[in-house]
Image 1 (cartoon, rainbow, N blue to C red):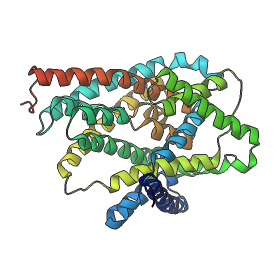
Image 2: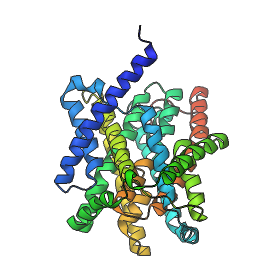
Image 3: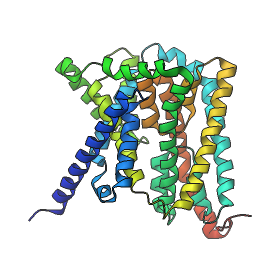
Length: 373
């Protein structure tokens, strides 16, 4: 008799295989069409539309956590690779853009919160978690603890991440032209293949990922799967202790995993059941994108920085997703990752306390749980 655990693992393996087949095929097609970030967009749209159009396929789509976590560990190492010794001298120069990003976040969140409180069905805690421009994982975890409709929070953040995911490659094509798209598609091809690397470098890559994760867990850092390997990789590269390459197969795997995972989650969303929630989520996402676009445009005009570089550093599109886009497009990954890491840590530290206080005020009657207005 097959144990439930083994049955679950077999099901997850089948889901991963089917998802990756669809994701790779659609990504390859997008590459032939010279689309920006082909495997990223191809994975997302291919898996999403496949599951949405073929309903019986939905249960067979998904990326299991035991696949996603190793990919995030490796992505953390890849991000840290970009923190070369000269980056230490540049961090002080990023104070202005970092301040602008923090101010934008501090302005955007209260505006969205106030708007949602005037919509039917959003109590203070639910509105607060939906209004947070970032911290997807933390918001969803807190939603399960404090609100009944945790799927609403998940949908808001999923729509935001997917919208940034899709709009950023299109912005690249619109602003820098087709030549920039072609250059970005060549990035993966020029990375060294796993077979061309010495076994020692592959072992060091894996060692930094595993040891970094272990240290992050011991230190109780937020997002240990990403920040641990990224932090250790940053340390060894900024001190010049080692230099690890980007591995082409791994970058491709990261695109299939992240794009396919988002697509599989979108495919399970029933439009008829959550049409109102999606409408609110799209409006909130449009406001977030417009606000951060404006902030990035203003900073680019004032500082002379590259607009797309600032956009990637500012926009709350998911730390994994945005840093991967920066890696693919050849932008300064250290600059982008630094800004997003600061925001993630701020949100991680502030969210639990604020959600707890709001929940207590609602229960004590100090805050009206019904929509305002």
